[in-house]
Each structure stands twice: as C-alpha cells, then as structure tokens.
Image (cartoon, rainbow, N blue to C red; front, side):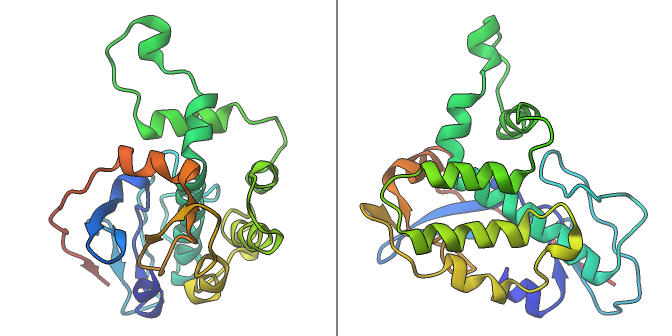
Length: 223
C-alpha cells in the first residue's frame, strides 16, 4: 500500500480475499496485498481511472464514469478502512450475522461479502460507519486509550462519507496503525507495515479464514 501510494498505483479491489496470509519463521504471520488485475499505474494524472465496484468494499461516491487520480486514491482508502474494520471485528460481525446454512438448512456458502453486506444493512438508520466503529472500539477491553484514539483517527481518515475528509497518502496513516502493542497480542505484519498488534481474540478469526497460500499476481494496467 505504501509503494502504491508513492508510485500512484490504484489497486481498485481491496478486500479480505485479496490479502494473503503467510507463515513467517521470524515474524509469525505476514500479510501481502494480492490480485492487481484491476489496478492502474497512473502515468498521466489527467486521464480518467475506471475502478471496479465490488460489493460491499466500495466507497459511497463510486460510479462508472471514471475518476481522476486523487479521487481514485480516496476510493482505495475507503476500501482499506472497510478491510481493517473486517480484520479487527470479524468475530463480532460473525456473531451479529445469521448464516443462511444454519437458518434454512441450505448448503450455500455464506461468503465474507455476504456476511459483511448483511452486517452493514443492519446498522442503525442514519448511523455512519465511523460512529459504529468508534462504539465497537470503546467496547474492546485491554486497549490503551492512545491506541484506541489512534485507531479511531485512522477510521475517520478512511471511512469518512465525504471523500474530502479522507486521507490522500498512506504514509500519514502509518503512525496510527504501526507499532502499538496490545496485551496478549500477536503481530500481523503487513505491507503498510503492520496491523497494530491485534489481540488474540480479535486475531484468531483472521488466520482461520485465510490459511497460508500463494497466488499469481495479474498484470497492472498502464495509463
């Protein structure tokens, strides 16, 4: 993500399925962003960038007419905020959503996307995501006030409904999600560069949902 920001690369499809978790001898687990099939390496900032719409990981202002570079970056940042929301609160979201296989006896797979869509649809009317995330962070025990405030600031800079209120550079977000440590935590080092040392309770769902695997990265579109 940091390299993407410096090189004006729009990923275009940030979501849990495109974050691969690998075991690492020294660092425990390493997360890498994958699948650049919809990405764009911007050479001419005046050219429109067409970004795919993958539910539910897209920003509210998304449309199919193309975006200028700065606006496209803010789409990626909103997707990044949703991705972090899922990574941090997946166990809570799982508890709050109903699996149709259990409810109806269906064998249909309840995907990450289906679960997230259901959870978003059941949020209180008129309540934005930042308010919702802030409430959930206040419910987390064993977290320092500064750590909680940093994460709230991170979500304010990524999940803002108004694109003008979102960050434009991942480097401004790194201090908010970088080197903090929570009690009884495991490290999840990522390309941005870490996911702030999650508690075991919040983290265990990540490893079980995304076992280590490899994938072939697709080519990047040049503009």
